[in-house]
Image (cartoon, rainbow, N blue to C red; front, side):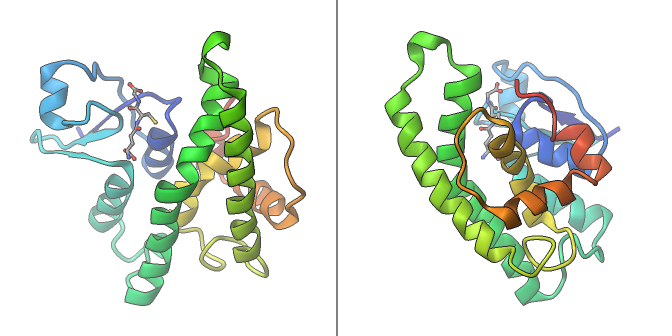
Length: 197
Ligand SMILES: N[C@@H](CCC(=O)N[C@@H](CS)C(=O)NCC(=O)O)C(=O)O
């Protein structure tokens, strides 16, 4: 059986779980795990024959390519696909860092390690980036049009956390509507829109 190594509370695992319904916990510091994933991070996808793949966005693309090559979730058309990948890369390359700072400050770090100055700066940066999503969502249900795509799966966890973290947020009505739309999807509510942990 194909196995997904990880933790269900991980933002990067959530998106893969949302795509497939199979999870397993791993001991990521052990040499056997490092042989599959040299970063020692989660998630790692392991096929029945032992072949393993890491980096959550790559895992999502691989699952679409192998399981649903014609699905609009990862469009075949080169330009549509590139648009989806732009937002996947944008989420990983720009939004994740400030969101991790905010999330860790409020949820994961013990009080003495919380850097509130860094949190304030991250909130300012994230607010500006969420403003880009607000514009992108103008007149469409999802990030790349009216179909759910990997761009939404990649962003979804941060959309949830942004709305439920105990922080002040600028008013972004398209983003709120988008979050409400995601909340109607069973995969999102089962694997992503969970209490913060
Ligand atoms: N770019 C990597 C990042 C992976 C990553 O940072 N994973 C975190 C969880 S979200 C991790 O493994 N943290 C250590 C742990 O949970 O043991 C990906 O998208 O897969």
